[in-house]
Length: 220
Image (spheres, rainbow, N blue to C red):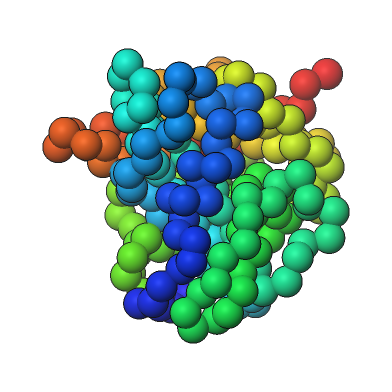
């Protein structure tokens, strides 16, 4: 289980994301800078204990209506080769030192654990408590064979979200569709092989629940 350190980050996560979000295709452009608050999320564990992984939800209140975004983040102690396009920024961790923070869609360790979560083979962890399962996260898998990540082949951002193209063992090419602007409810496509659902907590006291990720056949 990952250990959550009670320490400081400089700059903080919200500062990094406020600078990074406006350049993303799926971000709703507003007249001013993002005004972000934490709205929940969960973590996954790296079996090798090297990469921190967090599925962070932030709510932006800078526009005419609040929008909650899912941002999977990976935290590394050194730059990830070939992932410059996914770098959110660097920060100084009070215990671990400099950390390179990536959009997790570009990190093969996070993508591999997300694939395991989609199949119910990885246990979601509480965002702020060590050794504690996050019970709001559920997974549904309709496939009849276990899948492992072979290769992360491409990441495609669109106004609707992020498609993570992977080659799996043994089914070959598949796509993990990440929901970025979260919406309550929602249904997975009829041909979906799996999905992850979770709750989040935007300002106002509600706790909506929706789809965070869908595992689908690769487009032909």
